Image (cartoon, rainbow, N blue to C red; front, side, top):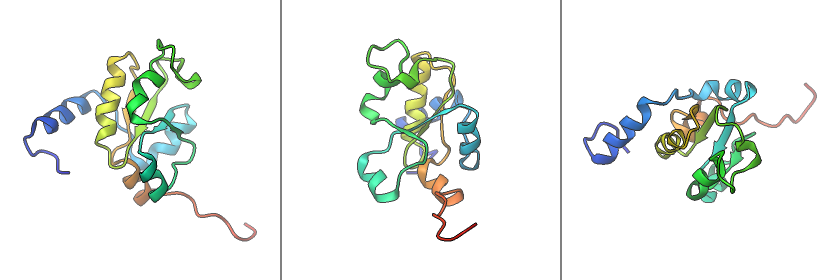
Length: 135
């Protein structure tokens, strides 16, 4: 996908991102350590192909709003604070921007996403390799 192509979805994406304080891949662990809820919205196939995101809560995109809306009877226990920072992660950082904007409209004022998505995180930070010997 390319940004700035003039399409309606590109305009919607740019509008959605205006209200987001997007997280850089190198800062994701710090955001999580500070209490942010990191939510992986990638489909199962992408998670199986590329790997899991350590410490992330997995929520299918098609039920995201119901699971994270603090007023929803279908919310997850982690979604009880509308002021908690929520960082959404998709594959490349497009769908997560649109979804974070939708969460903000539901009252999650600190919803945002990961710039570049899982792919950018994997390139810049990536999962730690398991240690095979003494440290």
